[in-house]
Length: 448
Image 1 (cartoon, rainbow, N blue to C red):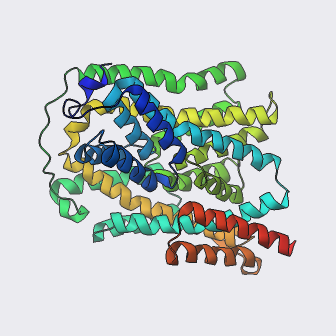
Image 2: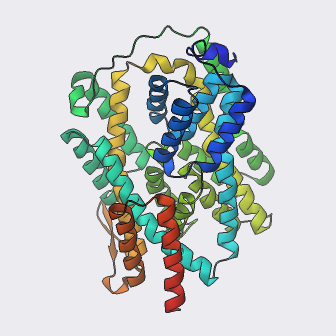
Image 3: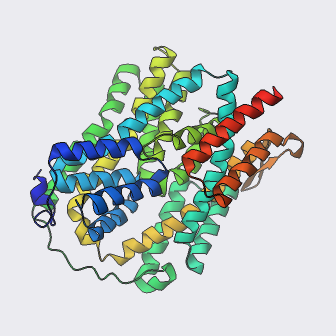
């Protein structure tokens, strides 16, 4: 792997930091990167482009566009790319790992608290209030992504079809993404204006020497790193052990996780709640609520899911140790592919600056993701506001019917308060979750 001075075309024009200085900044970003991908990308732009001037804005935005084409957490991948552009492999590893580790440690602590402190009124009340906040946060994500991504009739139609497909027909999320990407790719070649695309005016960049060799080395190395813990678990514990199941499931998830954590949750909820029974519906809402309160990518929600699944099927370990191993397996198999995509693809990023069909695929995927997140919002709303929800099937159709008599007045009132805080008062995510946790505690203590 060549060093960062050779990697970045702007290195000769910009004064790059020492590796030690970069480490301090990446650690700081890892500790304060709350707010999901939008907040994290804004934070990195302010620090890396405006304050430190380690990367210029066109290159930052182009790298972001590339990362948005990839499965996985785009903010963490963007950090990895910027670190790689400055200090090569060690820079990319440092930036990517420090973006994850603080939040992963916090999520592990919250997972332990969740399983060990259930039944404590204060903890139960806080989770009760956070669930209401999470419902509103997901709705806010639909509004935000919809404003950005649904600019034409075709894109609105893709979002509607994606919602109907996943909500009524249970079409798998990976298939929805694949179909949307194909439609966007083809439409962009003949009628890009239907996808709200503009012709790129970026200058052609000369191809990097040795890029295919770098990419091949990265693929070989990171495939081994990615699958090593899964193979070891299978050899030591047997192919049917929960750790192997988790490794295989989250490896698959890492490959199809286009559209961010909210879209991912729609697919993951379908799999871990309905298909595998690892979590109850309410626990999936808790999972996102806890992930929203931690720094790092929201995809760390997978760590909570894996912790709970392993905690409940611990043999031959203790429940807590099994849970820790499960959390580690999820984190490893979710994030190792992200490093693979960046280290293998970074040498080619400049080649993609004029690739209109890929931009079309991304636009179509973004539109479909709005429909997928809407499905998640409906699913969350039903399970937060109603105590009893029945799944009904009629031929190829499937939908959820709530029992009106089971409406949870407290949850409904808290959701309305959270909506006012987010949409009227425009309160920050962390502040909203904190207020709703306090209100949830007060409600539970008041009603017993």
